[in-house]
Image (cartoon, rainbow, N blue to C red):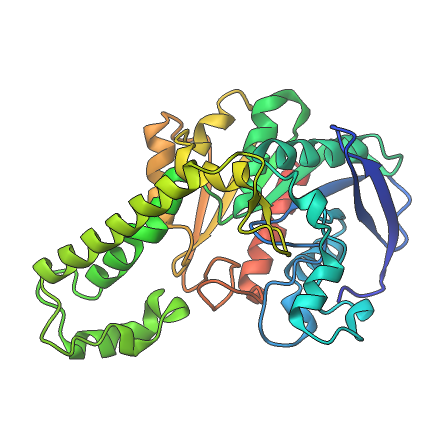
Length: 372
């Protein structure tokens, strides 16, 4: 967990819809009495509390937002982190020591009734609420607030910016979604494997066993799948075979889309049984929201820095940069693509811990934004 070399102020504030409360904390570097620049951190997809448990090493560095916050605090910046609506704790919280199963742990951490309220609009409004709280804080420089959004958290940032473009100061986007939610999910379900497989032989030749064995370990494929799933036991992967795989995944996606869009918006997702992740309205955005996220920033005049990784399993950096161009916003985003890093800017394609060079890049970007 984060070190004790800081001053922490917990907070609890009502949500904008007055249906529940948001809990979190602002951390200040020790010994600083002046009004400080502040980074407000918005987490990605998951049942995350303020610490964002997003690693599998069993160490404190698995808490992604704690790790990043420590770097920001060491650099002299204040940091605000908050629990996602309806999330009380994480699965390593001391209060869960007596829990006898993972299901019991989740039940103790998650308020399912509150999670049923979660929609894209509530996520946007919750970020707006904590940003408003931060701007009024006596120790925060309200002219130097940076919104840091990781993954889906960047979508909440985008929607908050669109709702109140003049209220934001600077944006730091970590592996952000800049194309539409629908395009992002369709790529993940349908096109992702095809994209990565073809990269094993960029010349378009059939992909042999030797090609798979040589390239798999350096491909994002290795973060999500096993090598045996892609060894071509019945001969090389030809264009025709890859096309058949693409068609099968397209059919599965179409069936899922039809089933999801038929659900009532207020139905719990994924099932009525705990833990509930969100409402069906939240899940539907991944099928029916075709608005590129990049377009939400059109009325925002402040600086925007984006950091991507080359082995990210969830977000394809080239697609996000194309979305910027298609939105006619070339030059509005400062883009950095970090070699060999994944979705959490770590050495794994999806999970943390964040790599030292990834964290350093985030901190340097935050300092530049704070000093603008």
